Image: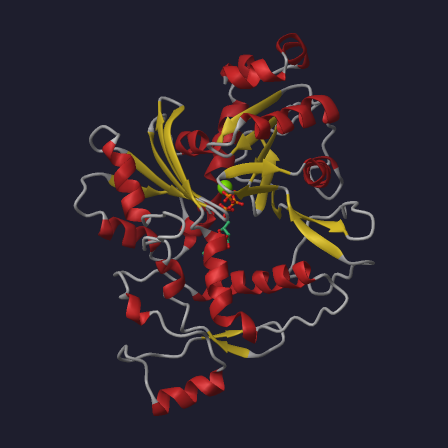
Length: 391
Ligand SMILES: Nc1ncnc2c1ncn2[C@@H]1O[C@H](COP(=O)(O)OP(=O)(O)OP(=O)(O)O)[C@@H](O)[C@H]1O
Ligand SMILES: [Mg+2]
């Protein structure tokens, strides 16, 4: 279904954006939602930043900026970056190449985003872009829809947040958000092995070089990390990562306390082999431990708390990019064995990161949904504040 009136579905996250046509079961593009702001005049480079693309040269230094971020318990959106990202992903030839005036826009919104956040999105699409119809859908509700339900508990482990939301008949009735998610895990891995990653980019800003290192950290996380089946005792959190050579030495002279400690290596872009055994299982462990500083009680406790407000046997959906850790679902089920509910990972492994997109895609393609779109006439008649408050 890609006739010229098929709506666009735009699932905007803090690390990546998923964009495609309504009715499709997967996004056409999954892109970084980080753009580069030139340090000289503050203008935005038109291409979303890919830090692993080492061959790309920028004519002048740029600072990476997220379109959407979660800081101090609040979601915010940078409107300059939103404009550049929307152009790049939806309306440029490199993106969907859609005509803004004829395509309705279905956008996802993080659960617990406030009215100021929603207002920026409404104003951008209704007033600046002037789409023919707009809808802002809650990402937890959409994930539950994507799993074929209208009620359940959505556990979305993304980049900046882990969000646990109770959805009842298509409405979020309770939700908590924590900052222990993909970014916190990246920082942890960085603190362990970051010193051994070399990024020769003298002409780039410090922030850019840091983000490039983080991109390599993410490769390590995606390819060399998994979730332990059982809780790792705190003492097994080993000291910071070392080079392979020093690790071999330490194995022969002072072995780790864990029996059978094996070195695991990851090949860095410059060809160096990095010992990642200090993070391969410990990184995902962050999701299962209480974190005093941020108040995160650990994933099992978060889910348990949300279940207490639910009826018996709630449907629990596990989704978000950081739910991709091998073994995470099994571990969560294992830790929750005293509860009678079933925890389902969203669809196949490959689809797990974009349940919000799939829910939006289904909804936006239903003929019965047509009366729910916000049209320019409706927007002008009621005004943005009233529309947001009535949602
Ligand atoms: N195979 C994998 N193993 C572990 N983590 C992964 C894997 N694939 C992706 N991730 C992590 O998932 C996170 C991105 O998840 P997702 O795309 O759901 O976030 P987002 O929607 O952009 O962010 P948020 O929901 O916090 O706004 C990143 O931290 C990324 O490194
Ligand atoms: Mg997300």
